[in-house]
Image 1 (cartoon, rainbow, N blue to C red):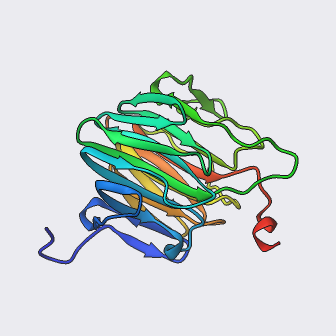
Image 2 (cartoon, rainbow, N blue to C red; image 1 turned 90 degrees about the vertical axis):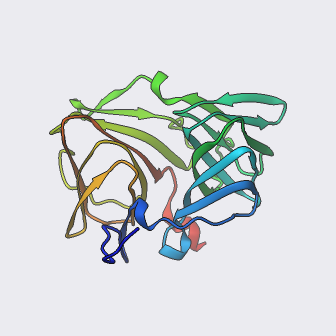
Length: 249
């Protein structure tokens, strides 16, 4: 509860920092016995939707839109996933990618929390369609970003033309930082999973910590440095493998 009206949350035309003290929960079509917090959406200017679904035991989640793909990452609890004839049990740090129009259902086996990214799929002429991906982030082999062993990246989706989104985790030892200020055409959605640090977004500098959500629009200058005594880690989304001209044609 805020008695002063103070918050670290800030929303600007090309970026946003959203902190847990300002989260508002509501229902979303396709989710039952679940409260959803929409963090990033087209209303903000994004081309995707990122939200958390807080599921009561027995709660379910299905896709309520056509031609929309979904990525889901388990933050807490156990969640069953039915997709086609396959059944999966997802635990914390497990994830699933569901191609557009792939019938599926999430069912909470206990109280659970999911990070969900929904995005309209952009078909690519001559490319195969993406396939279902189910995995566990801790089991992925990390790679050092640009040879820096202090910054480890785990890639959760295949880097193939059929996929038009990438979702990674990035882990920093204390004091590690991005090698330069990035400015690029891809937009980002980010959830801080562990630790904290300083994020530069455009000309603003923000202290960030676990639980914070960040949106970065295309061409927003961005940089991160880890602070504290434990590693900083975040999950980050970006659009890939497509010409932005496609949305104009």
